[in-house]
Image 1: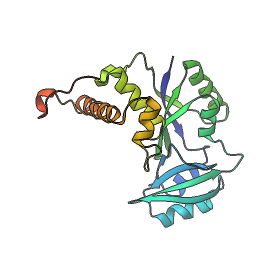
Image 2: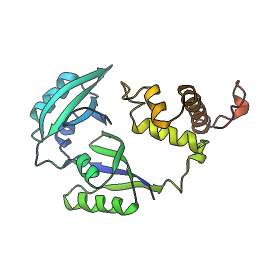
Image 3: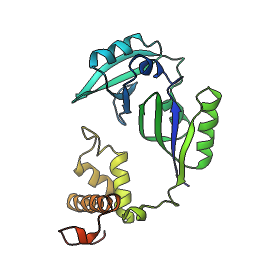
Length: 222
């Protein structure tokens, strides 16, 4: 049964602790999709010059390259030295999929999807053995916390998951709406309408807005 684990990991031992020591105001966010052998990390907080100085001086970091920039943050493709504990690679080896990963104040927070809870335990034990003891903040089965709690229909939920997995919400997008509609075997128009209804359901649920508070009439479920 698919499980989602939200875990905290200290930056110490992950290859990024030197960055936080050099620039404590640093924040990191993992880019889910990047075409390279390294890892895409959005870095922000200090100046670009301070960030690159820290990258140059960090012994756990090998090559790095600036990929993109957005306002006051920069996307770097970063390769860690072979002896560094690469948490992202460990997660993949244990069968997990990193849904999101961000760090600030010397602590990483990862949301990871696993096929079962045994894989969560295996990841925990493996990281603990390597001296990077994680803290499980939240662990739940998707069957226990279903999409219906967010007001989504089954099709809307599955469509949003597919959109995330295929990089539809990435910047820039990794898949077009036409390509995603073909993947889901539905028309472009049907996909557009389903996504709009899903957005509405999520906003209504998360912002605690009732249908009576909205101007537009309720839309039928899909």
